[in-house]
Amino acid sequence: MALLEVNGIHTYYGAIHALKGISVSVDEGEIVTLIGANGAGKSTTINTICGILHPAQGEIYLEGEAIHELPAHEIVMRGVSQAPEGRRVFGRLTVTENLEMGAYARSDNNGIRRDMERVFTLFPRLEERSKQVAGTLSGGEQQMLSMGRALMASPRLLLLDEPSMGLAPILVEAIFDTIREINARGTTVLLVEQNALMAFSVANRGYVLQTGEIQLADTAEALRQNDEVRKLYLGEA
Amino acid sequence: MRERLQNLDPLSVVLWLLRAAILGAVLWGTVATILNNPYSAENWLDFLVFGVAQGSLYALIALGYTLVYGVLFMINFAHGEFFMSGIFTATVFVAIPLSETAFWDSHPVLSLLVVALVAMATSVGIAVLTERVAYRPLRHAPRLVPLITAIGASFFWQYFFRGLYGSGITAFPPVEMLKGSLIVGGLEILWTQVVVIVASVLLLIGLYIFVMRTKTGKAMRAVAEDKQVAALMGIDVDRVIVITFATGAALAGAAGLLYALLFRQVHFFMGFFPGIKAFTAAVLGGIGSVPGAALGGLFLGMFESIGPSLFLEGLGIPAAYQLKDVIAFTMLVLVLIVRPQGILGERLAEKKA
Image (cartoon, rainbow over all chains, first blue to last red; front, side, top):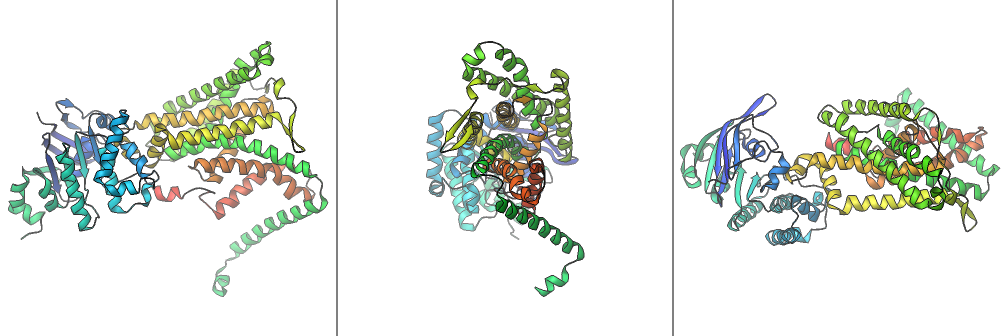
């Protein structure tokens, strides 16, 4: 059974039909990426999975259990957490407080402490700045904090929405190395990216979205070789 | 400089002259008061102590406005009624019956604690009910809608409790233990004032620790910043909003008892002026800021208590004390002209707009 099974979902933003029957499946231990242009429906897909939006049609199953009617905060408790687009750290809370909020749904204090140490090992910069308010961090540090905060939920499935957005190339490399490391330690990752090349370099499989529909679904390697993908998303002739 | 002078239109000249005239009158009055010296140093200290006591009440009530505004960007104009409902109910059902027994005088601390608990519980109940019935369905409506609803809720509760307990003024039974005053270095402070100030400070500290240190308090701050992301952290946003209303109302309920100790009376309309003043204090301190509400409350209380005598008495205005509201609101306008975000406030409205 797939860890996450998205089954033909339709999602609306008011009158806008944003998702027109998206199906995605993610197996335990995988990194799966969703790529596509702006407005293709990548973030909408992720926000429907985590319960910020609800599908008008279709179902979402987490290990066989339907989650598409649950409110966002209950989906977190079932092991799905997100580092949202644009980082959206709590700017007036300290780094440590942001991480504590990530673990809000948990009550196993020892586990929380262990995971906080783990986050600090992944991102030593965050430990140096643990008492600083998050609004004073640089963009790269805020991205680390946003990912660290999502990891604090100890998720089975981590949703990353555009983690490379607005970051210098060297930081993008570092962030993707970390995504590999997070995955190697057993967290399944669903990654939304505009930077398709970087996304394919870490992902096992990928989906290409266009105007709310899935155009292609294949292994990351095959997608990278695909002529159309190369032309449209990798900027190759 | 010359260019600026040339660009002045007649209206702004008039406005500047008006401001200068007000400032001049205040200065004139102050100098005249000081020269005439109608009050002794003890009188001034009395005014100050009364101002601090009154100000700490404003501060406690202001916190309710500021907490709710911080989380929902909504001015909860029914907050003054949360304040009134608690102590009015506790007076009618607990304080008065209890004062007719020997228990009231033999166990004054315990009696007052029971009154406080009933007042706080009632205020919290009314607040939670109002949030659930009147505010929550309108959470995503344009901002003006919940504002008007809050004004409606305010009137609703005023007349609800008027119908329930009557329109007269009900005396709060005197507490034997709190008669007389404490004398510190020649300064005489009424015991009720001591109780009001100490209890307010303790509650303010308690609230600050709650908001800054506890998991729920941190969740409140997270919800205030970004409700959607807070939900993504597993925070039940609706629950946190209810807790925010309840916290503000509990403080208002406690403030109600302190008000009753200070002024010895309760009535259905008692929430209106303290509510408006506390709202003023919250704006003055920077709405959304917890220390701002405390500071704004104290500031307003002291200003109101010293201001009339200091600024106006010297101008020969009779019964200057009755003009304290004019002074309070004039100061609000002046502060907002100079510093629209309040003393400790951030420019929230612009950032969130």
